[in-house]
Image 1 (spheres, one colour):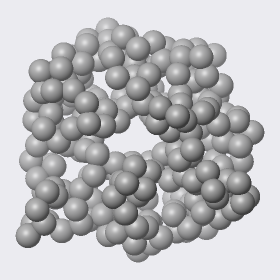
Image 2 (spheres, rainbow, N blue to C red):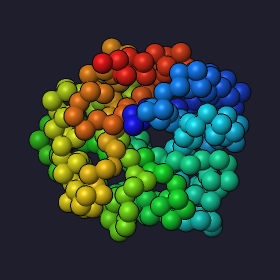
Image 3 (cartoon, one colour):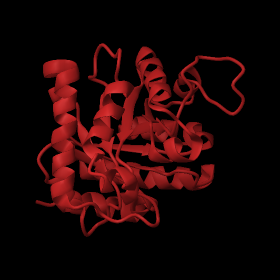
Image 4 (cartoon, one colour):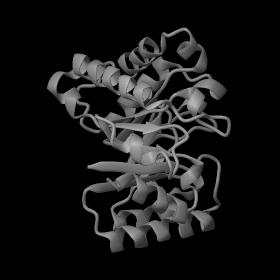
Length: 251
């Protein structure tokens, strides 16, 4: 299975999201590619608008974050219970922007992972080293720590996907990561997952994200251990989403 999708961040109105997902649905239906699992992660305000279309097309619908409590006095937050009621079946946790801009800790990511698992939400866990860690040559240890803490106490990792996104490679100023570096990071992630979960850890899909576009996606997609791609602004229009996907699947 090849997992391919995008985090739309703080973009698209409900009307725009509806058109976007409808076009992806039409492509998915026409392409008949059973070995490809698409996913989209819109703003919370757009979840209910696109939920039915995603469900009918078999596209996973994700949320960009969630709180670890089911309810309570947490102004501005959203719970797993509410996400599922909106039609979400996936949640992205630990995104670099949540960590760097909003002070999210590994320990809080772990609370969210356990809450998501309790409510049978698929988990897209984001990990990746900062530029400072990369320069100090401690990036692999940094990612290992993120994984070990985020997944601590999880009994079964079957609903987890790991999205490796080097922090220095995402955003408008990001640069594509060297293929050899990504391969090394994937090997470290797989090794860490095996140490935590044994044989079950060997089946956790590992995806790459970070300045992915139509020109470089194929190289990343065909790295050993790469089970898919998370694409940013290069996939925020349906036409470009499909274009990058087709290039990634091209052997």
